[in-house]
Length: 369
Image (cartoon, rainbow, N blue to C red; front, side):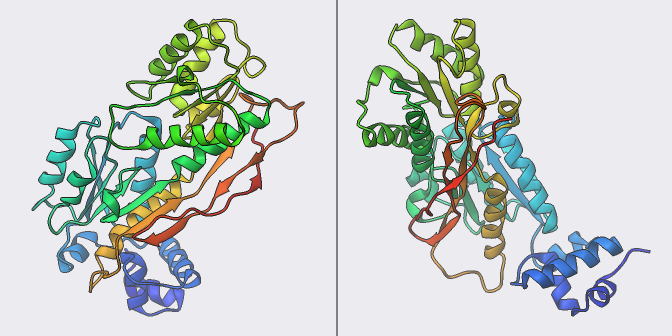
């Protein structure tokens, strides 16, 4: 027989309402109590009747996730994590691909009106803050990435400026002085590439290294072929370069392939840092040094923002800007076992209402395998 709420409550030694609160994810429950209830749920194999619960609450139990590229390793991993977090809350996730197209993003926002989804998590690439401020009526919207609608919507992001600065500083501490940046995207409005370029330039300036526009190689997209082509363009200029900071791991993997085919040794001749910490980078030859965002925290915080909107009464606080943690994970594309470990900065998660903050950094981490 299927266990019921009363049996779970008896096993956990709590009230039926507490079990309901844990299952629904709506009310504040002490971490120790939540863990005890979850253990009882797991032991008894309790499965909530999601359809009945959502019907009573006037909701469908469905949320939507819209990302630019489902095939992207980063967005694919993030979608999986969001689905796992949603399942814990008894929700299901509908995933939509926008291809970073303004028309698709706008139609998606307009199409949510009156639909069965309870909320939307969106990673916009093309819409302006003015577009995003026109949120779908009555449907909570949480933004991922750099575009934050001028602080008028809940927003979860990584501090790309700080992360890019730390990545570039790592290369500088290795004695590299001709550091290229692969990944500027002046054609996009999402601000991600612009912020990473800003952090790269800040690190150079802080070290007294001159900025060289010829070492900033723009790309159309953040894929491996774009990185390979950008690296070829860079090498064809004949300008000396001893390190590159790539704005995504896919760019870095493509750049490494071109560099290797051109006879460069990594990291002896060319040190390489990426961004995203995708699985392919961990198994590259050599393994890729990268910025590793706290992707589980991004998924968790995004759904917590949605859940807050489902409470009764709904929240009255200003929209939140949540900065998820990141760290620089050092592998063999920048340093080898016979070289000393390098400091890795880790930015802590910070939550603010209306304005963004970043947490302090500072642990040692060497992940060379």
